[in-house]
Length: 133
Length: 185
Image (cartoon, rainbow over all chains, first blue to last red; front, side, top):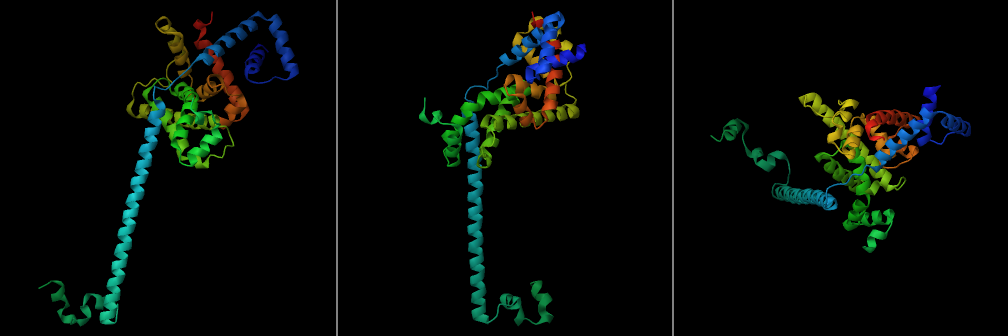
C-alpha cells in the first residue's frame, strides 16, 4: 500500500490522475508526513533537473553552415566529374560510330574481321601475325 | 532583428527548399539551444556533443525536402538528436568493450556522486547523477524534465508506449532522488 501510494505520487507529476486517485493521494498527503517529505524531495529533484542548461560553443551556426557548404561542394564536384565522364563517353561513342561508318563505307561491311583487316589474312599466317614475327 | 528571422518555421523551410541557405542559419539559431539540451543531457559535456549537434542539423538539411511538417520542427530535431546520441552511446560502449578503456559510461554507482560532493558544484553533481542513469532512463528524464516535453510527446519521440515512459520516469526519479539526497535541504 505504502509502495503504491508513492508510485501514485510520482505518477501525479507526469500524468493526470483520475479523480478518485487524486482524492486518495491528497487524503494521504494530508495525514502522512513521510509522503509529504517524499513529495517535497521529488519536487526539488525535478526543479534541479529542469534548471540544467546546456549550450553549444560559440559560432555553432557558422560551423554547421560550413559543413553544409563542404558537402555541397563535394556534391558539386561529383556532379561535375559525372558530367565530364558523360561528355567523354558521348565523344568516344560518336567517334566509334564514325569509325564504323567509315569502315562500312570503305569495306561495305562492319564485321569484326573487316575492322581489323584479318579477313585478308591467310589463317596459316595468323600465328605469325599475332606474334609480330 | 532581421526580418527573415521573424517568420515561422514553415516559411523558413520553404525558403531553404528554394535554395536560401541563410534561412537555414536562422533555423539553426532558433533550435540550437533545444538540441544542445538533448545532446549534452544524453552525452554529457564532451567533444563529441558539438559534432552530434552539427550532424543533427546536417541530417535535417539533407532531408528537408521530405519534411512534411506532420510534427513540429523542434520535435523532429529532438528525435534526430536523441537517435544520434543513442548511436554515439552505443559506439562508446563498443569502444569500451573492444579496448577496455576506463570509460565513464554506465559503471559509476550512485555512491560516486556523493563521495566527492564537496569538491563539485550543483550543476556538476546533477550532470553526474543524470549520467549515471542508463540511456533508457536518461532519455526520458532529458525529454520530460530538461526539454519540457509532455509524457505523450516524449513517448512519440522515443517511439515507446506512454506506459513505458511513465514507468521509466518513475524509476529514474527514484534513482535521481537517491543520488541527489545531499542537495535537498
